[in-house]
Each structure stands twice: as C-alpha cells, then as structure tokens.
Amino acid sequence: MKKYFNTHTKNEMIPGIHFDIKNTPSNIVQIDESHDFFKPENKNVPFDESAKKVSGHIDYKAVKWAECKQLRSQKINADLEYNGALFQMDEASRENLKDQKDEGETVEWRLLDNTSMELTPEDVSNILSLYRQRKQMLYVKSWEVESTINSSGNPKDLDIPTLYNEAIEK
Image 1 (cartoon, one colour):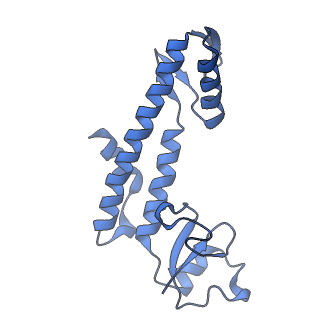
Image 2 (cartoon, rainbow, N blue to C red):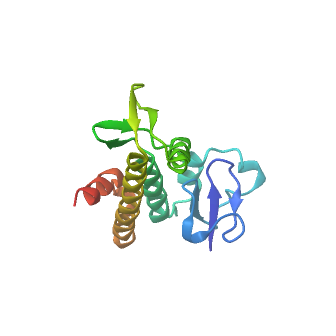
Image 3 (cartoon, one colour):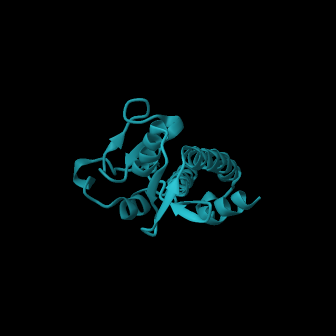
C-alpha cells in the first residue's frame, strides 16, 4: 500500500482529505508503506535522507510530475514581453492589470526595469490575453511531459526542465 508524505511538514497525508490526488502539490510524494518512516522517532529525519535509506520504493513518476508542475508554475508567472517591454506577471501584478482593465483609462505603468510606459485599456487587455494564452500552452505542454513521465521505464533519470523546454519549442 502506498502512503503520501509532505516533504515540508514531515507528516503523512491522506488523499481526498489533505489533498486532491489528481492535482497533487509538489511537496507531496508517494512512498511505500513497508518502511517505518512514520514512526514518531523518525518524524524529524529529513525526507531526502530517510526516503533513500529507509525505503527504496519512491514513486519517481509522482516526484517527476511534481517537479514538472513546479516548473510550469514558474513559467506561468515569469515576466511577459509586450511591445518590447517586460511586464511582471506574478499574482499581484496580474491583479493590478485586471483592476486597470476594469478602470478603462490610459495609465502610466511601471515596467520590470522600473521605467514607465503608457498603457491603453486595449494594451492591458492584450497583455492579459497573452498571459492566458501562455498559461494554456504551458498546461498543454506539461501534460505532454506527464505522458512521457508515465510511459518511462526509468522516470528517476528524466531531466524534466529539458523535456519541458523541448515540448515548448515544438
């Protein structure tokens, strides 16, 4: 039987209660129940050391998929180029852009390099549209990488950043 382990809190996690099995967070890994990792005296042992010493049954497909999802999130939130200027696309910046879109006025916008650019409502709409397109593309490409992970006979050796970048370049 498999158990799930939170690498941050060092606690056992239960699918359906602590997390959605279909959307497993990157800090949740699946490990074999046959070891004694969850005994109280072992709770403070760092995961990387204990998982390799105590159990040889790490679900590398789950680990690699978690790595892929983390990379996808980084790429989704990366800066975005529009009309030769770089815009921050972290959550706060996107919310500010959405608010500006709702205002419907032209505004001076602070760019990543701390220079300013005048943005029309159409510009704001275009930036948000480019962000949504990039986000959708990155999800589709991550699913291609997930398929590669799941069909791999040796997922432990997969280089996820390389696979993801190659999928994006297709």
